Image (cartoon, rainbow over all chains, first blue to last red):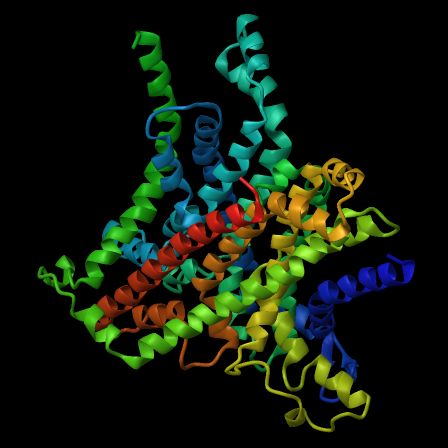
Length: 267
Length: 294
């Protein structure tokens, strides 16, 4: 391929990827931007001032999203890590069925499950609460954690652990000093992405949170396609920030390892 | 079996227990409760009888089949287009050239970006007063927004497709790229020394190796788009709405009598997506055999 075409490829991908994000940056600083102006005729900080004010509830929603996302990713580690290890390193009767039960939420729609869970949560009095929302976010998050970590454990050698145990290390020390360092890159990626799964949820939060649990996606959704593009853009940029951060952290490991990438089982 | 084996087996099941509790409890449990409600079984509301009426009502309605068709065609079109663009992209990204690291990075950018953010970006670009219309206006090709085609809230769902393409091309592309990198250049080099042409090397060496990745990645995309709610609700026409949108709108209606119907739509959506999955697995097996793979 000639360098001309390659230059075109780099530029083309850059424009296609960058434009939908760049236009939001411009909108967030626009004060007056009417058709057919290519750039705003007046710039301003009013959208950002609004976002940082109490009346926008963005700060509150940010904390709610962060809290729910952290709870979901930590719980996903606790729930998914042992299961991933069991599936990757052991053979046992019924393994096929267990795999199917644990991974089926990736391809089977969660609509009915979420609505069914809602009824149960109403009885348990955890509908309309952050706890209920955390639990329902586990449905898409845990299978993803299992998928990524099972692919990490599939290339993992337990010999070092056995050596550590023979040398007198207890289970906790073995995990902390031997297992954890070996699986850490994969675990980091999986944790970041389970956080982002929770962070990006809209419809599950809407159904289970019943409009009482206000995350950032709940604030952004009604503004899309509305009349106030500047505010929508500013909130959208706050909403996209952790994804861009995650990209900076994972770009390396994504580029280096097909095993980590193989776990990107999420469109 | 010795005592040791039993202990080992117990340990494995204890490791699986939390995940099974959460996923079987929440996902399968929720599915069963939802299924019960779609059959009119709602002990809370004093309804203990079971009926197929809610399903029958749907199946005789034209709106249901239109809605199913819309759901299917959005998912099918976006999966097909994403796959057709993603595979050549994976081949281009495989080579190292000046700027290839940058392109590789840019190609990964859409993966973690939430769909809502993409939807907003696409609206501001392709709406009738969006950036593209302004660009055309500055070139003198149009003078008012109404002359730009309606790509948002349109029947063809162009904006919906653009959002999915932006998100899913990198997803499929990266999965295929990962396989291409694992395969490495050796097989192709071998085939070349044996006199295989460029086309033969692709068709008989690489394609059988990457086909499982292409098919499983595109299957995940199809299942995801088929069941998604936000994007068609934000950017699509109100009627006929895709099944997930219809189901959730009914469920959220204050009239509780609509809930069994909402559940029935959801259950049919689930059944259809399982049907596609089974058909797809069949197709996958057939395609693999036909392509000379395993």
